[in-house]
Image 1 (cartoon, rainbow, N blue to C red):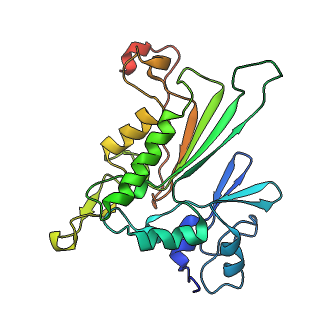
Image 2 (cartoon, rainbow, N blue to C red):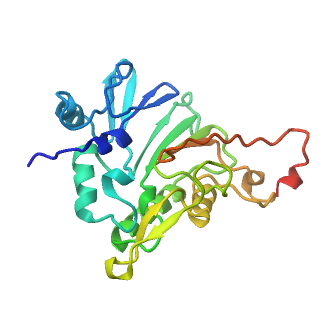
Image 3 (spheres, one colour):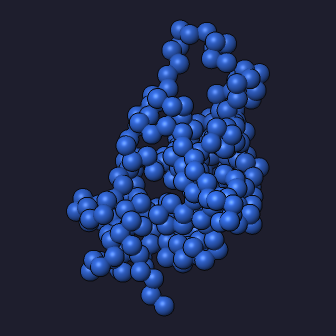
Length: 254
């Protein structure tokens, strides 16, 4: 059976990486990126989508990474095994990770410098969820990641998290403020729409995956692991720069 991908799917799943540069592909082919995904009906749509499976080399040093969005599988109140399988059949797993490391010279027992890529399906982190088993799978994936991370104090590695929903932001920080709606009870009362992750879900990511803490006595003095979080979904755009001046008393950050 042929899977027809709507234009909205193409808009939100195309992601190209060139070294450290990122570009999100739009509804039409971007002639500057060979890994653009185009909408249904294009002559290149079937060729492009069939070639991509979560992580795919596309030539000239570029890598395509597909991240599940709400136009692909819905929010927590929408996600079913059929919808998730449809996405994963074409684009690969919604939750996955891979690691890169540089070998140390022979005789060294210490791990070499490393980079860890994590793709997380953040669309079913909130409750109520339509399918609690699928949600449990995502939390198990997170727990497995957390249990296998290097110590927070290890500054020789970095963690890159790619996910669709942005972390929680208070109203006024971005154009889109916190927003949740839910289905009626007769339809399961699950999450119907959201702008950001909730505060609690965001804290789980920052504390669990990145080891951040308000406690200055925590490992790494609470600053957490090196890394970056890349998200989508925010249609209006938002740029926030978090800065702690070196002259500022570290105790004041708590």
